[in-house]
Structures are given as structure tokens and as C-alpha cells.
Image (cartoon, rainbow, N blue to C red):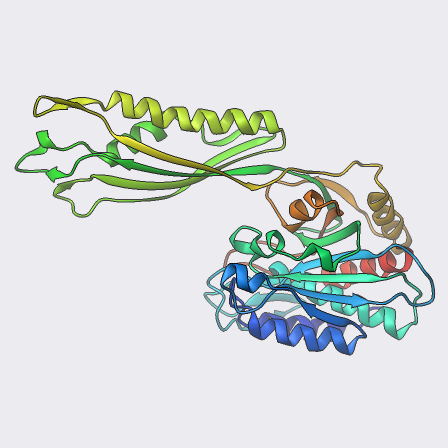
Length: 378
């Protein structure tokens, strides 16, 4: 049923198109032509105006064929992480890798290729289906930006699938919510060799806070991390300013709030511990802490109709389909928050966000077959 060579060729074409976040114009134009040739009406929303990108999210409407039904959302994203310029995909013994130094872009171009192949098969075989709404978002990799700025008035779907997780034979029904923290610490600059007594180190304040902070795996539902720190001007200057950026994630909203509060408290206690007298004046580091919700928690019930649809399709295709607990955010978090009950399907991609990223053609064939069965039963 699935044309293995066509699917392999499609992935190779997609992987070779450079498409970093907010610079997806070339791949968007390619996908618009490709999906239009398969019978879709193509729209782009205005997400580019809000994000400063080259182009908005792509929305492809496929009309019902042969039977009526509720529309079904099928979603992928068109951007990739860096380093992703001039990717040269290499196929060896049925496995795609990158030639050297770059990511492959299987995240999420494996999902795109699988979806396109499924739509090819549905058209070739005249498989009856209800309305389909294909959404290809921009800038997913830098914070689900495209999904956050998607024009939801252009969609009718209340259920859907996002093709965007690693491994095979798995679906994600639950994923954590997340908060992002941005912290600026302001101390006092001074010459470290001439007048260190006049300085108040912002970097030392940050170090005290981080040393006391619970980070990494907090429990089975919760993680936390600080991934960026910038500050100082020279090795002989006591640093007067430092900036940190981090996050907390949890499947439990209460735990997310508690972990976030703990992280803030660590900075406040560190600032108190660094208080001192300089020139007869009591001083302490000043904090500016911003907490912003990054994405909401996603939780789809195991007996939800969209889950039963996936299970029925997998059974018809003779494929396993286990439930996997998600650890990160995806466009599906945002779709669910907008009332579109969406689950995430594994695409076969592995070692993503690294030069070791790979995907097997056999796995893409399997996923494309599952999509055909989903569309047939939707």
C-alpha cells in the first residue's frame, strides 16, 4: 500500500531544505504546492506578522470524499533546530542520517513525509474520508511559537493528531505544563584587584542560588533546569550584572507552582545572604524575576474518542500502539488548550536535536500506513 521509494524520496527532498525557526519560507512554498497537488485548498495565516517570521502557518483543507464526518486535524511543524543549514541526507542500509555536522531534520520532516505519503495513498486508492485539516506550523522549536499564534478561526476540527515524538508504536496522551523564568541580578562592579571591597558579585549571588536549588529530575512528574547564564565584563572586574534563563515543568499544576516558587525563593535567599556594608551603606543584590507560562499541561483521557480511533487504526494495521508519558511540550499542548483534543504520534525519529539524528525508512513506512488507517476510520 505504501510506496516506499516515493516516501524515501520525499523525506530526502524535505531534509535538504533549510528551514530554521522563522525562516521557513522556502519549505512552506514547497509544501503549499505539494499539498495543493494532492487536492487541498491552501491558506497561510498571519502568524508571521506577530512573530517577525518569513511566512505564517500553513493550513490545508481537504474536502470530504465519499462520506461526511467531523473534520480531523493532522499536524506537523516545518522548522528544525540548528545546526540545520545545507543538510545532506544520506541513506545507508535503509537508515537516513546527516552527512556531517548538522542535524538531519527528521524532527519533524519524517512526520511531514509520512503524512504526505498517507495522503498520496488515500487519493490513489480512493479511500473515503471526512474533511481533513492539515496544519504545518512555523517556529515550533523555539517555544511552540507558530501554534501559539495560529489563527484558530480558520479551523473546524475538535480532534486531531500531531506527528512529533521519538520512537515507534507509541502515542502521547499527557505532557507537562511549563513555566519559564528570566532572572536578572544586579550587584556592584569594582576592580577585583584594586578595590574588591567595593564590589558585590552578581555571579556569586547566582551561584549561591543555584547551589541550593533543586534541579533536574524532581520527581516522576516534575523537572527543572537553568540553561542560560550570561554576565560579567572581564576577569578583573567584579561582575555587577548577570542574567539567567530557566524553566520548570510538571504534569501536576500544584507541583509546577511549588517548584517555580522554590526557584524564586532560592534567588531571594541568596540575595539576602550576600547583603553587606559598602562605604557605610547596607547593600544587597537587586533581583528582577519574570515568570511566564510557557505552555499548558496536556491530558487526554485514555478512553477519549481520539484515542479509540488511534487504537482501532493500529489494530487494523497490525501495529502496536502503546501509551507514552510525554516529557516536553509540543504543538499538541496548545491545540488542546484551544479545545482541539489532540494526541501525539511517534514518527520513528531518533537522537533528535543532535548530529546523530536518524530515521529508518521502514519506520516511516509503518507510520504512513497507520495514518492511512486513521484517515479511513476518522
